[in-house]
Length: 173
Image (cartoon, rainbow, N blue to C red; front, side, top):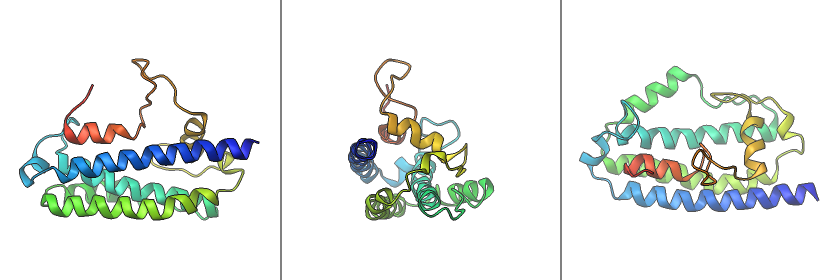
């Protein structure tokens, strides 16, 4: 019964992520070269910074999924310095290149995610795969537990997929 419940939650989360990815792609596609150079809602970051971060972050989560699935140490990022250099070096690229990067990242995630989550071992939550800010089980456990009320009681968490859309578009609540 527990495995069925976990897979049902994972399927629901995957559907939410797919919808969020669609919104992200639509928002990104609407940005011009001037738009990607404009400030985002994140201090010190342009919208281009956010787009690069989202693309590299999606790739980094595939690293964590590989680690969880295989047990082979696959860090989220080679190092934080490499992550920061990747973001800085690409943030001012033309909108078309940034959008293509996001599209490639989303396409890869869509190909890998269903097969990757289906092969997760039952003890994945107890493993100690470390990402940028902690162990993978700290990411998986709340996700598998379902939504929890946010600070405004709206049922959203800090990691809700819709946040990227709001950060890039400059629209927020």
